[in-house]
Length: 258
Ligand code: SF4
Image (cartoon, rainbow, N blue to C red; front, side):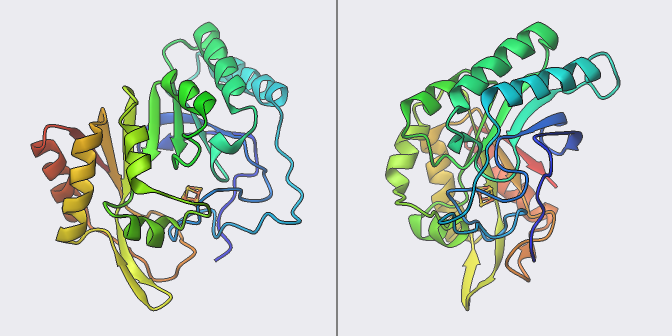
């Protein structure tokens, strides 16, 4: 399947399973997905090769102006956002002005809609950049991906396009005080190879990492829409609840979103 792309820079507000009434901010192109990962379940489809591709990203001024207009239109209505959410057609922290945009968003939020949360949905691949890490410390919902307990499983599910070391990633996540972990559980066959991060062995390894990282809470969810790999299985509510219970029993808050 081709995948679904957001065709606007500011989109919604949508009713988000995880964040309530959420105004989306897409810092990536509106015509193509740009990401450092190539997850088998990505709703945007496979990540295209960027070599030779013309990539136009909105600049800081364009983003903040459009966001201000949207907020002026929405504040005081029944669609007033509960979250200003950086998500969209790929990995938001890849934007070269990400930190400045977060700073401007904080100022707009404080001025126009102080009760709204600022959320970033990220795959965590840019956390080695100090300015990205520092910006994520300043937001309310710093939501980072952890879809497996072993490097092998993460490679199969998320297909990082650059070097990935799970132990380094975990060490970085441990330095956040405002971290939310998002984990998608899925099983299916990819190129003749079975992928399943919901087996006992996998969940145990993942839970060990979660306990080591100690996030504020864990978001557990399943595939919802079409995926680039055909035939991936959507886990049942009961299976996800059982995983969430194990997290709670370990003393960490967890919520299932289906
Ligand atoms: S990190 Fe997100 S945008 Fe990137 S491939 Fe995975 S699901 Fe898609």
